[in-house]
Amino acid sequence: MPEVTFPQSEGEPVVVDLHDPYWAAFLGWLWPGAGHFYQRRFVKGFLFMICVLSTYFFGLGLGHGRVVYASLKSGDIRWQYFCQLGVGAPALPALVQSFKTSQGRDPFFVLCERYPANYGNAGSGNSIERQRAQLRFERVTAENNFEAYQGPTLKDGFMAPPAGPVLQNSSDVLGKWHFDYKHNFEMGTLYTVIAGLLNLLVIYDAFVGPAILTPRQNQELNKKKRK
Amino acid sequence: MFDLIDFPGLNVVDATILATATAARIWYAIPLVLVVSLVYGATRHEYLLEILVHSFRSAIWLLTFMTAIFVVIWVAGYWN
Image (cartoon, rainbow over all chains, first blue to last red; front, side, top):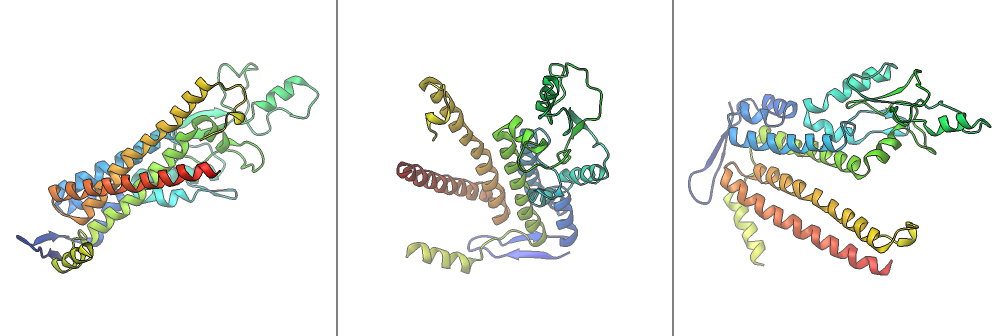
């Protein structure tokens, strides 16, 4: 049970019992604040849990459950997920969804269905075919499903990667997400990324204790300020 | 800022509403500043009062820095 003591320039030194720091760091990654609860540092545990999880879930809500997904597809490498993974368990369903959809299966928790990439024919002389082509990747709704389409669809899943092909020069499902949710998609991504990065600070605090300045460091800092 | 030429058929009233809506997005920064300040403050101290004091200072510093960047970009926009 390593105890860390931080001497103060005034008053009693701050003593922090880190218990098992490796286990605390792992718990802190798995659920923000859990490492601090394990160390019986309840106030900081609550503070971290509320700050990190509220930021994460607010961002996830802004992005309608689509901003946290894992993808290494060519053209859609979701690097943001590596930051979001810092939140731990709340970001792990994205891995399950990615694994499930990579095998060609539908995701869990389907949010909506979309017309497939090969729906209709844009170059056809038939106006109905051209009309169908305009519906590619659009949501299947009661209003636009005038032909009662029953064929295979692309499915948006909660924390699942965008279904269908990744197209560089025309719209695809990811493009539709950006179009449908406007700036909220980027804001949701930003919030969830920041939540993941903040949790790295939380893990650090659980592992080595707070980065409190020593009296000597404080003196040097004050000297610099006076200059 | 945007140019009315980019939005054909947009009158001044519509443009004002659009500009207001765009400016409203700046409010998304406030929760982030609060949360970042609190977490950063908490990694530098162990007790709640010290954490809150440090967080308050960090929040002010962050907002000042963001305002300075905003002013620089805003002024640079005149040369665009």
